[in-house]
Image (tube, rainbow, N blue to C red; front, top):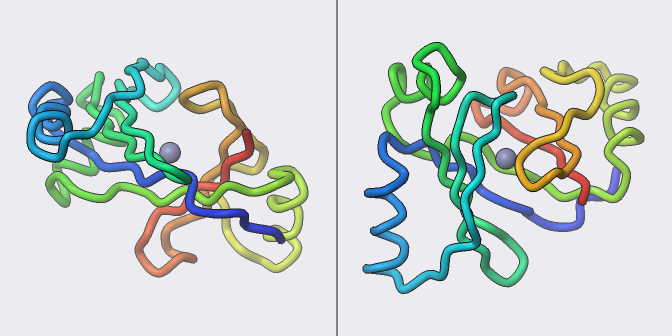
Length: 133
Ligand code: ZN
C-alpha cells in the first residue's frame, strides 16, 4: 500500500460560517470553496495548503454522521485522509489483511474524489479515510 501524503484533515464544526471566519480572519487562510455532499449529510468548506487541505464539515441533517459526532464528542478533528495511488488496490489489500472497513468499495466524496473509510476501531479511535484524486 502506497500512501503519498496526508490529503486533508476533516474537522467537524457547528457553524461553517463562524469556523471559516476563524481561518480567514485570524489565520489569514484563503478559502478553496464550499460544497454540499448529500452522501455525507454535510456541507464542506476547504482551506488548501501546499500538500494538504483543511476540510471543515457542518451537518446538514441532525441524523447524519457529522451531527452525531458533534453530539457525542463536540467540535474537533473528525477524520484524517491519506492520499493513495490506487484506492481499489488499497481496499483489497486491507481486506486481505483482515482490517475492517466502513466502505467495502470506493464512493465519491467532496470534490469528486474517490474515498473509503477504515473502521475507527481498527485505527485506534481515529477515523481514517483513503482517497484517490
Ligand atoms: Zn474527508
